[in-house]
Amino acid sequence: MLHARTPLSITKRLAAVTTGLALLAGMTACSGDGKIPAAAGASGGGLTVAKAKQKGTLNIAIGNEPPYTKIAGDGSVTGAEPDVVRAVAKRMGIKNVKGTVTPYDSMIPGLKAGRWDTVAAGLFMKQSRCSQVIYTSPVIVSTESFAVPTGNPKKLATIADVTKNPKLKVAVLKGGFEEGILDGVKLAGGQKVVVSDAQTGVEALKSNRADAFLLPTLSLTDLKKTSGGFDVTKAISDAPVTGSGAAFATTDKAFANAYNAELEKFKKTSEFDSIMSKWGFDADAARKATVTELCKSKG
Image (tube, rainbow, N blue to C red; front, side, top):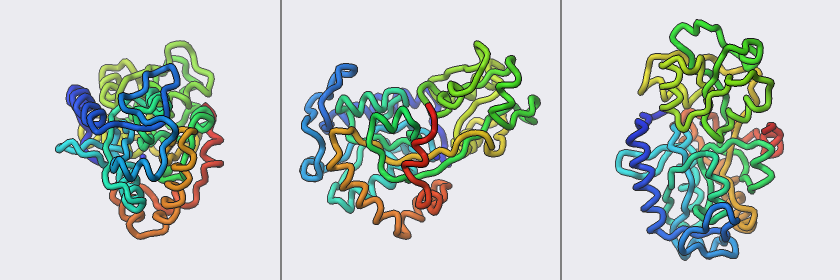
């Protein structure tokens, strides 16, 4: 971790509107870390269940990348991860969930700075991230694929295919899990093409600035429905198993533990199965996966 993907220009406008709404709602979490100023009204001292109930809203960072997260036409937040957060929050007595669209490489710094209470964006677990935040148990488990020109003329199927041919260029999202995959292998200079969002990745592919676009399989499948003009390969066999849950600041351990306990109960319900099925994910895969396993991914 499909629905219509928002074009780049619209995404930027929605991001600005959503950010404004989130700030007006009054975001709280831990104090700033010196890299990003703490949000106005940030409570400090760590998020607690009591504080969250009193506030009545859980603010989440999202990427607007279906099926993981999505901004609906009316501005509401949905997608696999936000839908699970909303259900768990409700069980905890927290009525509302509001989202802020942000780049992946800004999600953890923003969490530390108190700009949102949690990240629920398909922020895949890996060593560098797991050392900075508290992840809940897995909510989604995913695979990776390449978007390639129709017919896959370069016959790309694996990461090894990329390392063997120094002329191949692969687009990845800045700060995304996939950039970490490429950073973990030996590539020639210029093989990695960093893009700001999914639509830009497709444009790089179509304009021949990249031979492939590396992204989760379901994300590419959804993107193909709206953008077209490319094929999606089968799941890449030598890419690591990926998965995510909600991520909390280390100062919010008490809240994270309470949330995770409620999440574990929720994962045993048919409602969890329904949410996963709606967005194309396997509920049993999420139940079987562990944080320890997924956090072993390098990067």
